[in-house]
Amino acid sequence: MKKLLFSLSIMIFAVAFLTGCKQDPSSSSIMTMKAPPPANAHPEIALTGTTTSKNTSYQTIAVMDSDGANLTNVFTASTVNQSLHRPTWSGNGNEIVFFETDLGSTTARTTLKKFTVTVTNGVATGGTATTLVTKSSTDNSIWTAEWSPSTTNSQIAYTTIASGGAHGSTLYTVAGTGGASTLVTSSSDCNFTGITWNSGASKIAIVCQYFTSPTSDTVSYYCIKIVNTSGVLQDSIGIANYKGILANNIEWSRTGIDQLAYTTAVFTNGGTEFLSGTDSVLVQDASSAGTAAFAVAGQHATWSPTNWKLAYNSATGISTVITASGTTASISTTGNMPNWKK
Image (tube, rainbow, N blue to C red; front, side, top):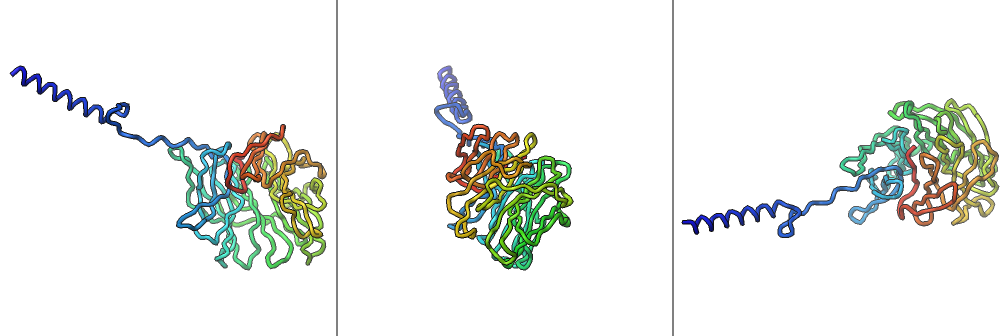
């Protein structure tokens, strides 16, 4: 009897031991594998990208950390005809506005849209996009847009450009919550190729592209006009080394300094074509007449929140540059049109 009880005790101990091993992930005998926790995303930079589904590529809006980590698509175009442009963060850093071009649509050829970005369990995701402005194929097309840095008076500035080969642009603002657009200013003899808010959200800088005549496609010169939110001209300053260059993709520095970063490229063939490989990001004071304080090869620059760095399109993808030293670093091999949180 004692032998039987002893044998039963051994069997019960063995079953309990084996059961315990099965439930104990630290056991080397029987393990229950757990998936590693997701990376803790801190989305700081919005950019455009692509994704592939069933051998078809679609454009996307993506976000990533300031060092390029956790690159994640948060919005995807629904058709191959849709191109996504110029994503910019809201002042509170919770939403992204962009404009979409749809060559397959006549009623919504260009649209201004926004969506919310959230981080759940360490992963960034995007909500459903809300349409703010719609332009048909017969309307003037949306050309650029930027959300103001204000967290209390959320406004989005956007421009339209004349269609059908004509020249002329209009600058509007629309509330971040939607509603009717407000006319700020317009021009019949130049194109607005870039806009940006100052850090106080009280002024908008506009890159103006002038032509040799109203019917000519030959560019005469560029300049930067600064208006208040009512459209009243505050200043007009020259582009650094402006003769014979393209200028666009402008962004005003954050609080602390007063500088403008914008893209330039060299013209050839009498001002009708751009010389490949000559794109540069120039930085100049917002009150100076065309003196470049800093330059780096690339395009579409965006300031970090403390003005310490610029992120920009480079030959290797997305790079950053320390403005004080000129030291560059590649942070992503894919993507376009980066925009840093305010």
